[in-house]
Length: 442
Image (tube, rainbow, N blue to C red; front, side, top):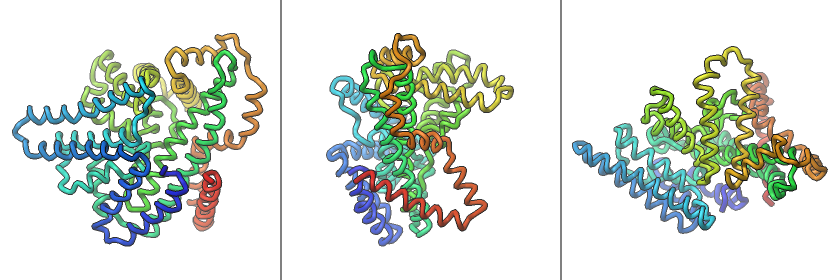
């Protein structure tokens, strides 16, 4: 049962909301945890036991850390065990993917990273052992966020779980975010996928320059709308039950530098890597080679959030080059560069990077790059591509405008200057989007 399926939207979710609203606030975490476990079991079956084992292991590690303050070496061993456990799990699934094509279970990465952050906070004294495992398990296993995040912090989010207020206002705000996320995932991302997949099936020797450019652009927007849509679904459902989740995507395609892009794209994961790895490695306070190594390691780890492939490693290395260029050269001259040119530079760099997502191997991605820049003897375009683009012109207009935040800007202006009209329009717009989403899912 996917979070964007009709059975979830019109059956499971209403029952969960009704149960959450009907019970006293003190038992709402238990209801939400039970609902999350049930929903995940319907989705991934026996993989639920793996997630529960990981959380129970980290919960016991946190308990031991709290009771051995005077044993610093033993505490380091415990922390090492928690970190090694995550790397071992990732290594096993990376090898399985390389050998058998087996993908990692839904939610495993989110749970491993979130739970590890909790253990590290306990080790550093920023968090205490949670006596009530329900709160900790819910923080990790809240079903909607298992797809793509956001990654939550124990210290920031736990107070919300202890005071889950469900009101008509929270239901309205959360419902609007939820429907917006559904529209991104079901309408935009799926429509873009319908353009991308036929182009990706074309053998490279038969492709054209414009075909590869369109393919890369479609994948870049598809990744954004798919991931940000799932995060909005999680945020919307969380808001409806009083659980405030952080934003994970802040219009990254409006970024004016690669560093700015990473502060807007999958930002909770980037924040996690910066907080627990990059800063502990010394950040930018060392010599050039050390800084380069730190940035490279952090960027590769952030890129591997999207999959354990060599191309993801190359993707991280590619961005490292531009991060270093910005830090040691562009940063000194950015005041002299018009914002439009900085945005064009960043957009070009980011869009080109998705060629490493298109290719299965680094060599295949390089072949696509050669086609994109006319270094292979291929045609400029073909009529079939033009027909495909003409058949999907509406999504080709909506996707970049939505990604650049135009609907948000219009909504903000309307809310400021025409508040009553905005309220009616927002309600009607949300209802219309829900009807369209439902039609797409039928």
